[in-house]
Structure formats: C-alpha cells, structure tokens
Amino acid sequence: MIALVAAQEKVLNAVHQATPRVLPIQEAYGLVLAENIVSREEVPHFANSAVDGFAVRAQDVAHVPATLRVVDEIAAGGIPNVAVGSGETSRIMTGAPMPSGADAVVMVEDSAEGATPNEVVLRASVQMGQAVRPRGDDVHIGDVVFRVGDVLHPAAVGVLASINVSQVSAVPRLRVAVLSTGDELVDDGSPLALGQIRESNRTMLMGLVTQVGCEAVDYGIVRDNEQALEETLRAAASECDAIVTSGGVSMGAYDVVKALLGRIAQMTWMQIAIKPAKPFAFGLLDAPRESAPNRQVPIFGLPGNPVSSLVSFELLARPALRKMMGHSAMHRAQLLAVADTPFLRKTDGKIHFLRVVAKSHEDGRIHVSPVGQQGSHQLAASALANALAILPDGDGVVQGAEVRVVALSDLAQGA
Ligand code: AMP
Ligand code: MG
Image (cartoon, rainbow, N blue to C red; front, side, top):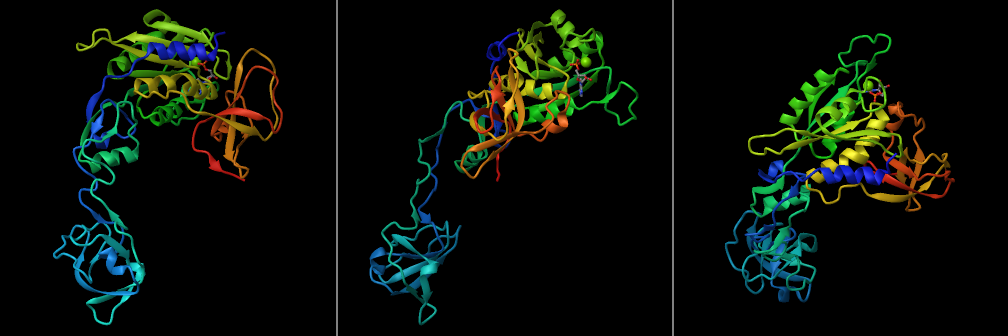
C-alpha cells in the first residue's frame, strides 16, 4: 500500500495547468486569472452622495435645526443644475453627483418639511465630507485590482465589470469526460434482471466535476470490454482535457480499466492506504493535436463502489483538476471538530475517512456525528454527509475528543 500523500503527490506532479485563454468576463466566473488587472478607470467616477438626503455646506448646519432653501433636485444619473450657495441645499439621491459648493450630505431621515415647499429644516449637523463618496474612493486609475492566480469569484467579476474590463486572460474551464464501466450497469429505466444494478456513479461524478468548476461531458456506460473502452477513451481524450472513469480498477478478472490503461497509457496503479477507496489507477494517455504534439490527457480511474468513487474523487481527482484549472489551493481546508459520538476503528495501516454531518455548534465549534451506514456500497447514507472525518491509523477517537475533518460543502448552523 502507498500512503495517501504520496499518491496525491504522484498525481499532482503528473498534471499541469491548462494554457490560459482570453475569455469574456461572463464566462470567467470561478476561473483563475492569468494576468494582472490594472484599472484604467476610477470607481466611483465622480463624487456622489452615499444617501438620499440634502447636499449642504457643512458650516450651514453647524447649528441645528437649520432652515435652508432648496435650489435643486438631483437623481442618480442626473446632473446638478446649480451650485449650492450659503444658506442653500439641493435635494440629492443615493449615487447622484454632488453639486459644486456642497461638501456634505444630511440624510433625509434628519430633515423635516419647511414653512414653504422651497424650504427644508435640517436637524442634524454633519462633518465636511460626511455621506459623500469621493471620486476614486473604491478604485484608482493604476490600481492593480487583481493579480495572476486570483480566483474570479462573483464579486471579482463584478469589479471587472465596474472598471470596464470585458475580457480577461484566465485558465479556461476544463472539459472533463465522465464514464462508467461495468456489464452490470443499467441506466435506461428498464426492470433490473438478477445481477444488474442501476448506474449511479456517472451522475454523481458529473456533479462533482461540475462542483470543481469544470464542464462535465457524459461518455455513458462502457461495457467490460477492452476494445470498447479503448475506443471511448481515445475519443474522450481527443475531445476533453481529462477523463474520470468509474469501476474496473481492482483485482477482479474483469477490471478492464486497469488492464487497458496498463497497455495503452502511462499508468500508475495504486493500492492507497485509505478506507474507503483503496484501489486507484492514474494514467496519461497520448492524445496529440497539431498544435500540441506531446499532449497527454490524464485519466482518473476511480473504484466502482459508489462511496469509494466519491472519496477517491475528492482526495485524488479534485486536487489534480484544481491544479489544472490554475488553483494554488488544491486541497480542501481541514478543520478541527468535536466528535459527538465515539469514532472507533481498528488498526489496519490505513487512514479512515468517515462520512459525517458537521454542524457549527452554539459553543462556536464544529461538531460532527457519523451519517450511519458506512459501507462503501451504501451511498444513500453518505449522501447526507457534508464532511469527511479523518481517522488516522489506530483505535479512533472517543466521544468529545477532537477529530480532523474535511468539509465537502457548506456547514450549517446547528443546535
Ligand atoms: P468495480 O470497481 O468495477 O469492481 O465495482 C465495484 C462495485 O461497485 C460493484 O459492486 C459494482 O457493481 C459497483 N459499481 C461499479 N460501477 C458502478 C456505477 N457506475 N454505479 C453504481 N455502482 C457501480
Ligand atoms: Mg466493474
């Protein structure tokens, strides 16, 4: 058996970041930047009001209540028509340009109607600059707003739009082929004959691939037949950037993925010291293109047991796909949690990954409890988990002890 970290290192060392491409920002969400972004515009572009209220000279409201003459009304998108003089004010809306002469804004909540429609009574004093957003307050011309390696989260693409950057050089979304192998698999809704099972891994893996930010491409079920598998893998390699397969990597007589990759690809077959998901095959398949004669496509050969497939994807395929997508943080964050039940196990030389529900507790810590059935074929129980508890080799942990966990999705606030 090989240690998990050694297996992860082997796989990570064999894959490379994809070549950056210029993309419209609408397609860049979640991608990694391949250039520094320098702003050519100021945000905001002009001094404007942060509130709905009255643009004033601060000195005119030094003593309140103060009655001022309303000389103008400025909406967002509008233009001030007149300057604000001594004893005067302009009604102003959030985001509207500040009129000249005014140096602060009194919120509408601090105003009352005056004796005539042209007058307003202001009841609060303001400092110079109060409730005014100066020009360039958020971004200045020449600011490096994002750098190579930054992830284009939703707010980041929003910023790009705000500074009139409509396309960026980024590591493109990978196209990842997903296929399942097995003579026993059925996915057409027909009644199950003895020995048949409904295919589930492909649907799950396409979801996992999508979660990484890749485009999942469905290559269906391939029977346990080396020739059929070779045809599908070669087609997938020519059309996609990576391939994820399920099944056929164990020691059985029909484990065609392992057999075929050993023959046609540069394969590393591993028995990893983890439970579940011990067998794993990683291959590099030559898929030359005119523009890239040495092109190789990585193949992640995951085990067929559904829970093993899930864990294997998380621990081995996901970090590699993230590296290919340009992320420097390839692994999921680990946190310390409190075991709400004993997590007992036996020494067997492996790290155990237990499927658990992790909740943020009112004591401010994360608490975890197992989802129930932990068999590698029992996907229904695992589907309720939002984290994996990591149990190093040994006897496990007692109730109330700390256990390290990997969060697989958002943690809810629990009881
Ligand atoms: P294998 O890794 O091919 O030896 O398969 C191990 C176990 O996982 C067997 O019980 C298979 O029937 C089951 N299995 C394999 N592929 C899938 C799949 N795509 N969906 C659901 N179960 C599967
Ligand atoms: Mg099989």
